[in-house]
Length: 327
Image (tube, rainbow, N blue to C red; front, top):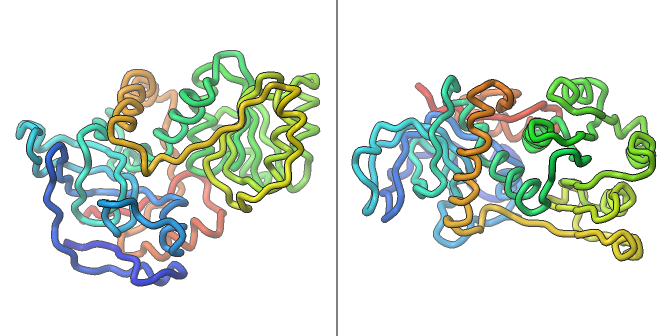
């Protein structure tokens, strides 16, 4: 099969097409013929040599796929062959065939293309498990997500709004803030021109937001603490500017804040299955009704994975970047 491998740690150019043996599904897995795969920030970090695949996972990058089931492992009924699915995987997505555990499989929402379906798993699983499960965002609360025009950001804006939150977001240009408002953000702040802490305090009469989803880290951690309301919850899912921070913990104590974080890739299939079930029940109807949608910036031929990673690192995209394996 055709696959895109990381020849060695380095820049986008180390992503090279190659021939690999087609994988065989293990017990509790299916083999999917991949039609499209999502490109995510963890793929870039893996390519740089800073995020190795977990034990037992493929060294081929790619954490989300959409395609058709072509074979099943022990314990999976053969009648599933032919199903069109999207799936969260621990690796191996940048290939014509990829195995996936049955727990993370979801039917492609009605009306979506393979490319659109491949834009769902990583971001929707991440947002649901962190914003709604871990941070417990409720209807009527205020929510802040940084990087609102990213894949995670565009998903978080839509889901938070759909479930009744007031949504704040930050982005790095007027075009990106306009894009965020189109997605449903109540307040989209250009962090290059405006202090988001002061803006949020002003818009909330000094109360602040109830939940922050942070991918930036660094100096943003202290700013986020300033933005949080009493009993606020702060969730870290990435550290684009670094994990080492100098933070005054007094506000954390005085405001009774919860500071937490998580990663998704290494979690158990049982955990991911619980998230998948929640998404199917609570989010799939919103997607099929057109109230929430995966947002795609660009679709690249799989052989142009290096170009896709270059775009990802430039951070000029709005929404998801997808690799197509459709012939």
